Structures are given as C-alpha cells and as structure tokens.
Length: 308
Image (tube, rainbow, N blue to C red; front, side, top):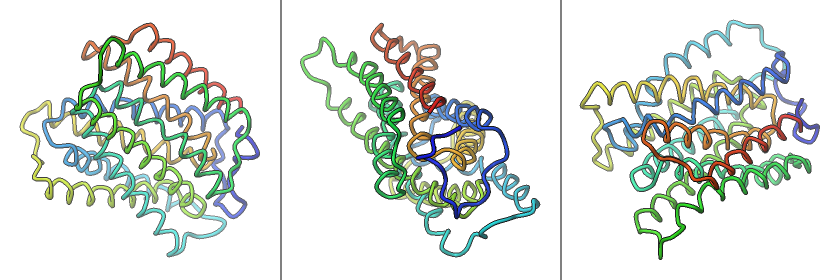
C-alpha cells in the first residue's frame, strides 16, 4: 500500500482493483523491460531519433488493443474531457525528448553510465510532485531517494577513477543522459496529471503517437538513417517497441494510477541495475566492486519504497 501522502487525488478515476502488491510487481516488471532499451538501441542500425520512432510505431498496435479493451469496460467517475489532452500530448513530447537524448547518449558513453544518469529523474520528480501536485514525500521515500542516489553515484564515479580528466565524448554522453533524466521526470509528472482523469491505455496510445511524430520529425531534420539495414537492426527496433515500450512503459503507466509520482519514479532506478547486468553479460562491461555495491543500495531503496 502506498503512503497516504502519495495517494491519488479524490477527483481521480477509480483506482485499479488489483492488490497493492500486484501493482508494485507490475511497476517493477515495467521498469525491468525498460532496462533493456539501451541494449536494443546498441543493436539498432538507425539514428537515435529513428530508434525512438520505431519504438513507438511497433508499440502502437498493442497500445491500441489495450485502449480498446479499456473502452469496453463500464466507466465510472469523472469522464475524460478536452482538458486532459494537454497533459497527454505534453507527456508524448517530453517522452520523445527523453528517448532522443538517451539514445544519443549511448553513442558517447557506456550503457550503464547512460542508464544510471538517465534514471536520476527521481530527484526532479519528488520535488516536482511536491511543488506541482501537492504530493509531500514521506520520510521513508526521502530516505530511499538518498540511498538510491548514493548507489547511483557509486556506480558512476569509478568510471572516472585513475584518469586525469574525462574525455569530451564521455562528458557529452553524460550531459545528454542527465538532460534525458530531466525530460523523463517532467514526463512522469505529466502522466500523473493525466491519470487523474484518463485511463492508462488511452494515455499510452495518444502520448506514444505524439512521441512517434516528434521522433520522426527529429530524424528527418537531423538527416538520420531511418530504415534498419539488417535483420539484427529490425529485431532491435521491434524489441524496443514491444518489450521496452508496449510492455514496459504500459505497465508503468498502469501502475502510476496507484502510486504517487515520487514513489513510482524512485522505482525507476531499477532499470539502471538491469542495464548494468545486461551490458555486463552482452558487451562485457563488467562493473567494479563499488558499482556492485551501488546496485545493492538501489535494490534496498526499491524495497524501502515497497514498504513505504
């Protein structure tokens, strides 16, 4: 059960009937799927924005089916009106910015580093949820946040050990990942606002369509390669769409109806752990003992959010 301070406003649609544990597991499963997005992007032979476009395009049929199933159920409470479209469209644009920046960062830095810095969004989300949504974080959530950020630092800092100065490319990649984190934080807040008046399937479909348009325009503007040139490239962008977005982002959007923005986004540090392990197994990016300890700290933070 989420903390009272992080509950959904009374004007929201009825909360999901599934137990709190099921919602937490759905949130964690969605975060795990997103953790593989960096792996898929590395195998894709298209540009950063193009990868984002295909991610949305292949997820669209699944999301349309989800929305259709939602519309067949009886609806109670406040119906979604025209005003709800603004946060949904805004969420799509913000997610498009996040996807493009994160994908671009992978060309300059490691998957682990990009994922860790890209998942520092809880800092901005806790503050944004507090200031904009009135979701005052509990002491447990703040403590878990500090633990998660400490773990993230332990994962990132060893990369710079033993060198006089980081390379310009590494700094560029890290900067892009941090900018992606800020965009994702704003995306989560926009989704939480939309979830007050609209169902998860509708939000996922419309925001994804908006994101697809944004990414396609960006790819054309930047002159990127849009069509994958190999079977591996096609499988990678299909994985981005079906695993990382349709399943991963969909489960997260569904779970945000039960968890506040601060608690939900804090669990989003889990993809960084998944990315570190996957990059180690697939690309040989072996973490140091300090990085491994940082991963344990992140796991502890996730458990604190569950109890909070």
